[in-house]
Length: 226
Ligand code: DC
Image 1 (tube, rainbow, N blue to C red):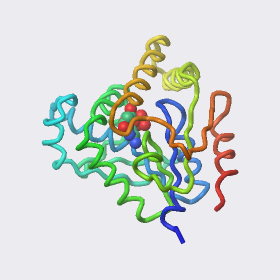
Image 2: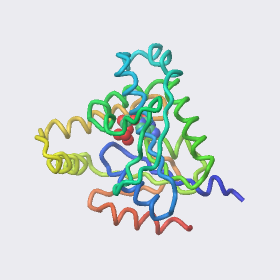
Image 3: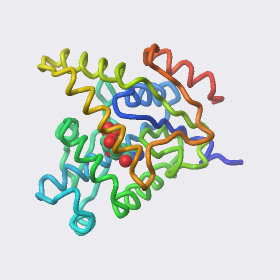
């Protein structure tokens, strides 16, 4: 009856909550496609950075948007990270930095950017069988999705995970700085006027502060009839 809509799962939540790991894992188990909407905002931010466009300047960002062609491809690597292309150039690694994350957050406040990327996400989802992750996938992009989740965790526990990740990558970490960056990003993403980060009223709220990804995925699956 509602095949297209019934085959969309949305997972929204703040930065560093583990949405990507959970979304990728859930998509793999359901044999759905993982749609990383944050990667698209990051791609726009990266494109602006390359062209030296000020991400705070909406008119300047709007002017270069038509020059950006963004596409995502499922990767065949072990961790299932998506491959991200900007104008046919693979930029997957370049966009996974804290700097691009912050620029993405700034670029995401602009209406032309949101309208453009929301439309692109909806076109991709027309094929069905999607697990979409982001900030507004349950509220704005796929308001009629069959399964909506809001994944949350305390800023302290998110900072702790991020610190571990960075240390595992051999990087030096300033713990206080990481926590303050997380708090700043939460504030920016949830206080913007367009499509702010907030749980959809229909979303199932999951506090993953004391849960690992496997447990979160199992809990989500228990809600999904597939
Ligand atoms: O999930 P992420 O860290 O890759 O997202 C980067 C930024 O992109 C995030 O801080 C806000 C923006 N974003 C958004 O506004 N809407 C989305 N659906 C996904 C990301």
